[in-house]
Length: 194
Ligand code: MN3
Image (cartoon, rainbow, N blue to C red; front, top):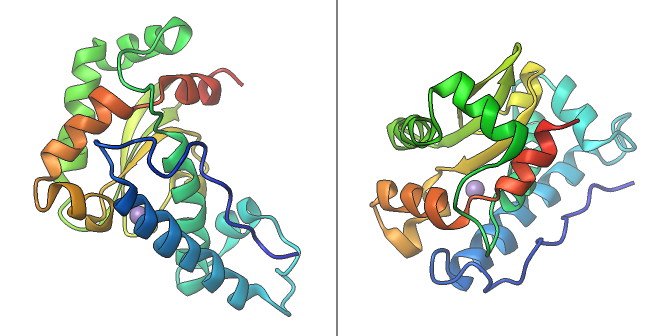
């Protein structure tokens, strides 16, 4: 059973002008799709052919299989971490947990931005559960909290392909827009409650 490319949770142009339809066409239609195709090529005819994506990501050794599987998982999580109606502030139990772990919602946003801007190469910044609280996690390349037994609540992709067409080298502007206009707090809250 091949791994499938999940449908985007919104239209290709729904995040415009913050993330353009052109960026989505490459990032989802080419990059994400390529990871799916590569992964299926690697598992076809092996004992992983019927494994779930989560099983592959959780168990693969470092290398091409892990990189492609993790990038499939990471990108699906990233699309869901954004919404055309995103931005604003979290509410309820998640808001309380963020205030407890980071001091305030604004302090969380500052720390999340600093981590995302400060990743020197290609990678991801995450909000994750850590013990009884929450933490920001930086991962490089394809690495993902799932491979470290951590529960992710939201993520931003800071590979250049995520923002270069719209922001060129201005990663801080992309991160600001993600936080203020796109961040899907309802998705993060849903990941936090279970
Ligand atoms: Mn990407």
